[in-house]
Image 1 (cartoon, helix red, strand yellow):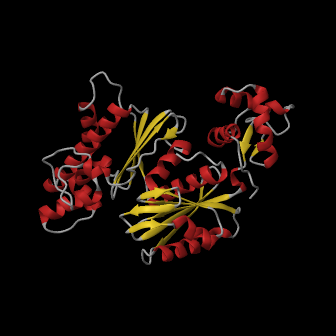
Image 2 (cartoon, rainbow, N blue to C red):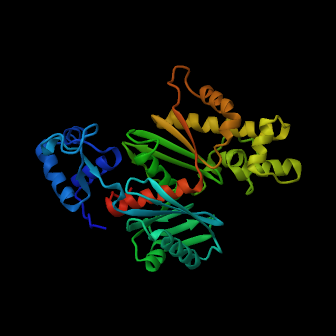
Image 3 (cartoon, helix red, strand yellow):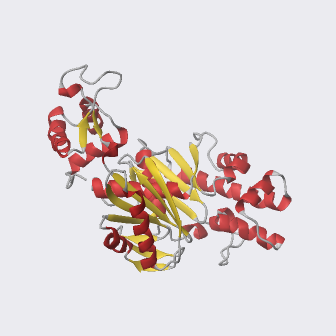
Length: 382
């Protein structure tokens, strides 16, 4: 891959604008970035010379139909290199190969033999070698994990994996020879949706994920807001009903106990004396089975309450609901929406709530986007 680093702050702004919204004419770029034509020319020249940006024909006309460089839009060569993104769960590793514009070109999936960090790094190296043939050169690797990550390199604490202070980026870099970025999986998903998904072009945007746990991310001014408690289980401290059900560790009435997949399954198991899958519980609720309907109804009201609170306090233009637990909306979406309205001012604008059923490959794509941001564009760490 051509070396595109380092980029100045101005060059980086131009490159990101074209990557996310391109192809763009120079006039449009200057307008978006509040630059003079002279300043824009100064910033784009090294980007074109390095190969990061290229001039392309105007849409709707053949190449060469119009003369003059200013009329030719600028774009990136999305297929010039590939990126790998990995999502590590407690029992499997999911991977994707993407272009520079995060389009997925291949999906990978392997069982996790055990959770020993060295063995996990070995597995990631094996998976990295799989898509090497017949694809553009790999430029870097992004890895998403559920837990607290320091310096986009060290997994400081991951309850799902039982890890503390694991230098995962170094372990994988030693085995692959590629640059590696490690990040909290929710943070990576938020970045991907901000640049290439539901939050693209928005100034204020929020993401709420439901699944094995709860995740939350907030974007202000087009940038993700970092916080020290990221993925440290804040859902168990987000009390919805102080008289509600217990979690496995004894917390009562929290968002975690009411809304996560383990919390919902725990309630059903405690009531029935036997286990049921999340899908079976949702199906039972849809068919009117009393216990399943009660638990799913409580979960829907908890979700509506959370969404309303986010809307009331963060005032986002859109809230994205994602994760493997969003099937709840198919069964109890009316209850969720009704609860949102009940917890909002009568004259408040309706909440723009977008639902995205995310599998673990979507989380892996988020990690790949982190690699694009940090390794290619040297995006500032947030």
